[in-house]
Length: 134
Image 1 (tube, one colour):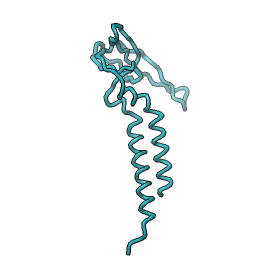
Image 2: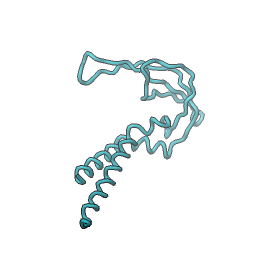
Image 3: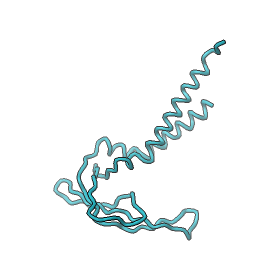
């Protein structure tokens, strides 16, 4: 059981690095600034399995000030309905965006599970090397 557990753990660690290395850099090195949602852009998403099925999302347009410049960007995390405008948000920039929990998703839980499986596999390996106690 140790080998499959180790392989799955390593795969999850690699996947979490691929998904989250940019966000982790921003969390550790980025600067925070107050911003606000100034609007929403409607975006249609088509299902890859069905050309006829699509869903609509509303991506927030955020404005913040950095180095005496006004910066606007469209966030990647939308909602199913357009929300209120002039809602205050915190922007994490390197330059990028800060969402305290969302910055850690989806890569951090995958990393934690991968690390757990790798450590469990190592523990299982060393336990299997011990002589059986009578």
